[in-house]
Image (cartoon, rainbow, N blue to C red; front, side, top):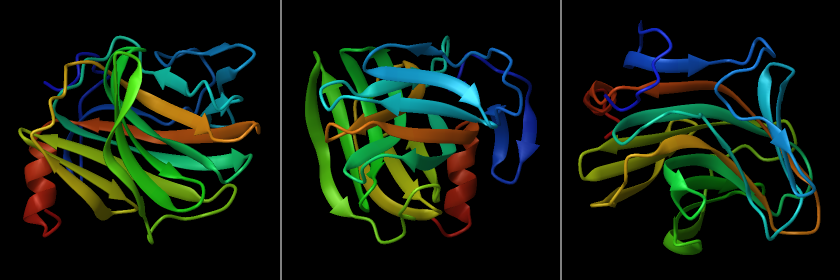
Length: 210
């Protein structure tokens, strides 16, 4: 299985859902909540709220105990405040703060794929214009990462925006990330998170979205 933490197994339109969370309750969940001078993470208003306050310190929020390496992750992301010069999205293959991958959209309409190796950011797919992203505060974007063997596909609002072959993805935790590129606090709300098993990828491909 792609995820070790399974909170009930249900069947949806894409196949088996191993995990889902809509944060309808503020009761503590497996998503980490903490605050510091440069970051903050909490559950409120039916979403996982993540704040980044410094360009030097991206904020990651993790589904603690997860162990994903294949399948699909999807979620809603909505910038609530702050500069459009920011990025936010999905973290996967998170081994520790020195090693993980992140697929992000930006507040000004781009997408990017990066890998953090030994604490340094390596650009896998540089920023490219994403014409299907919804811009502005409180605009909702549905992000999706599919890992299917040697192929990784990335979607924004149902449209494939990039594909990569032969990414070396370690088994690691999944989560979200928010980064501000200016000295301006940025808050992003994440909601309706789902993790699917590998059969999801074949189902989606069969519908004409390879």
